[in-house]
Image 1 (cartoon, rainbow, N blue to C red):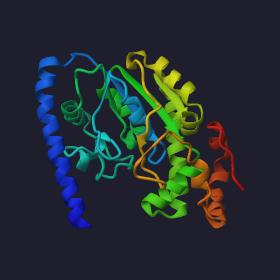
Image 2 (spheres, rainbow, N blue to C red):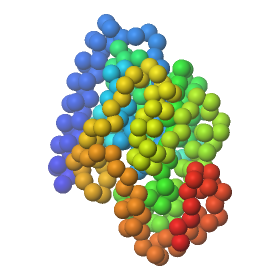
Image 3 (tube, one colour):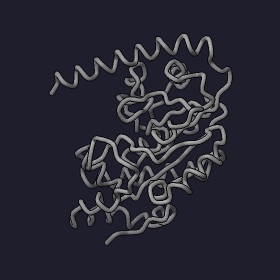
Image 4 (tube, rainbow, N blue to C red):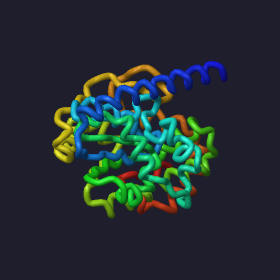
Length: 270
């Protein structure tokens, strides 16, 4: 297994090196002088990879990382700074100018819109704004019970940790919604169940995107498949995996934050 992981990482390194090499010439010869920057603000396991893939169907947008979960924080030069360096610790300060310089090498600067979807962006909006200009933020959350299930399953986390983490993410998103003017909020449920409406809102929010296609099959990172599938709301299936005892523990935290859940339109499940 370790050998397989090592080989996969080696292939990724080769891919990243070749990508930067090709970007060096196209960016220096054909790159734009001015760009719009789009940051997806979304907790892990809440649909950010799906949203990234949908937005990447635009001919006017470039994502800085197309591998795995497609996060800029996982690029080789910044992974030790952003991903391994206590990324969810509020006391950690990122060297954002250095990070931007790295990301610019991976973005296709011929495109008008340059996008990143690192999950820890949700807690660093104020810092991002100090370095990046002409910014758009797309914020998204998911039913917190489904979010908790994902954290438990994917991270082998305790129920207590998962419930507290889900609430922390909702608090960050509430702060972002209330304090950031150039932000569009969507829920995972809207994206899946009201797809055309959600896509229209995104296109109106960033007209430079042009047309985006949500009717394709997208690469899935969920409990059902690692292949490709159409957009589908998986909340019910995820929540049904939680046991009664787990829901009891989750509610011991959620019932203290009913107003926060109501803010996003979510309810306590008994």
